[in-house]
Length: 118
Length: 112
Image 1 (cartoon, each protein chain N blue to C red):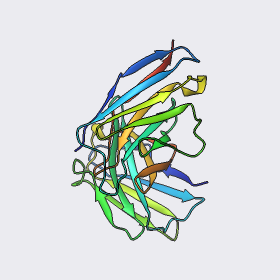
Image 2 (image 1 turned 90 degrees about the horizontal axis):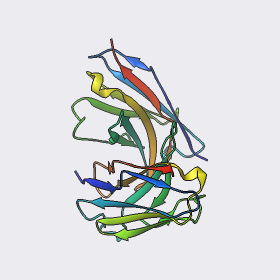
Image 3 (image 1 turned 180 degrees about the vertical axis):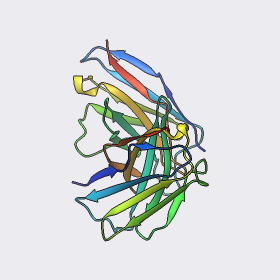
Image 4 (image 1 turned 45 degrees about the horizontal axis):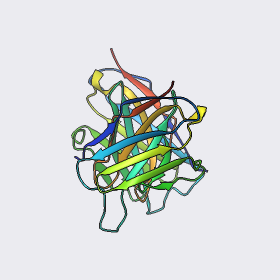
């Protein structure tokens, strides 16, 4: 059974960079059919796809966040990463990592709440 | 971006009764490979979304057969034949036909 687990600080200061790690266990991380995603759930505003990274490090980002977001991965550690720069209170959300296999988002982490506040 | 619109936004159902949720997309979700890229999720309070259906009508592993999905093109429906107590929560549809993937607003299924 594939498991994903988010980790990182729960509080980030405005204008700083939000950095999260997703650790994947129980499955192959370096499979070309998988895309590794970050998705966030804004309070009262539903779910928003942030972007994905493939096993070679190729990325795609939501145009709404493209100027501030960077994704990367470490296949040796079975981890992928989110960096979101210049955060504001509007970036306060629960952040999820999830696997996409052939268009199916089949496994998700439990989510981590990140609050942007001074 | 493809806009996903769910109705209703809330639904009160007595356990054992059926329930149905609609999801409409602003563009067809049929891909050139012949597949329709529409997913359904259930999110219980305090939990992450869990996949119920993929390709509009295929149940994910372990999902009870009281759940069924139908629809094509731009109009989709999730039906629960007899709602069980563990089915209460918020349901989301999601399109993965094109980037960026987008979600419906969610439908909260509550106990009547």
